[in-house]
Image 1 (cartoon, rainbow, N blue to C red):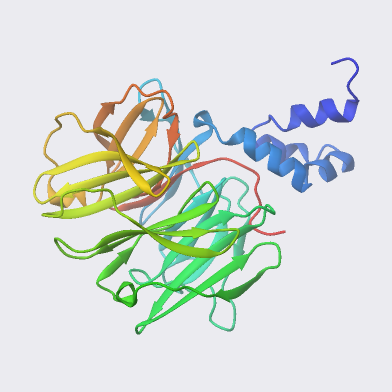
Image 2 (image 1 turned 30 degrees about the vertical axis):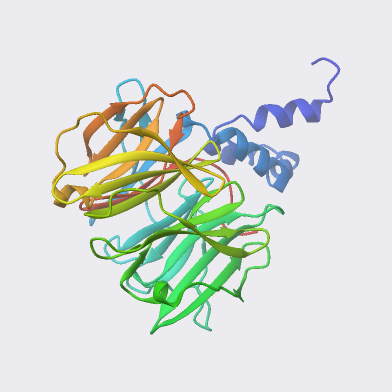
Length: 352
């Protein structure tokens, strides 16, 4: 260590600071401000921030927006801190659509505008344009947030409008939208199909596309973020005699799916994607029946080997998986009466 240049030592120390401390450190001197603003620093700091101890739960209801730490020792939330939205809104009408590396892609429901927002630094960027790009309609559109091989953060926006599908990509680097081709089955354009938010894993965005009735078609659409090519793969072989819901999650850069099936009592299995095929990892041990009203609103995340199925602000039940690879999983989360996400605190900026 004594032979290392002072600049290198400072760089190594600062990349290990919590995100909020990095923000405070920018005011130390001009040299530190310049160092902490470089893309190399942000990238390395982000890679060291994506750990389970740095996870936070953001919850939005009609009156407040709050952030809480996750306490792994007792599987609970820590004390909440109130978050003030840095952008104009009406009665907290903010929906979280996707998240990646501390950035949230959100929609302002009263204007349909899309924004990128870092709740840790409070920085945000409006993605809407005068030529009608960057406007999101719930139940028709799908959003995926990703980073490509050139470290450019991008938003994929799939729009369904009167039977016409358009696919657009927003680039943070060039601050603009462009159209890309998308060839798929025409029936997926129908409002009878529900598209999930995109889950980024291993250079690909994955979407579940599920028909909105019992026994309907369920597939997974894959988008290679570097070649910008789409393909379709099958759903896990789950029973089709009830409602089907697939929640995609990235576990250490391997795609997994929590597949829920049934009608009045639900079964939930965990699958992993190997190539283009699904392998069952585990089935739930016996659990209390989940009523349909709760099942439609539950969310899943895994931390420190336990799988939690949550509703509202309480824990519905916990499953001890005893599987070391599962350190942290955080899909976009929805609660009855609340909207939120589990995210990590970083200094990644929504704009360049």
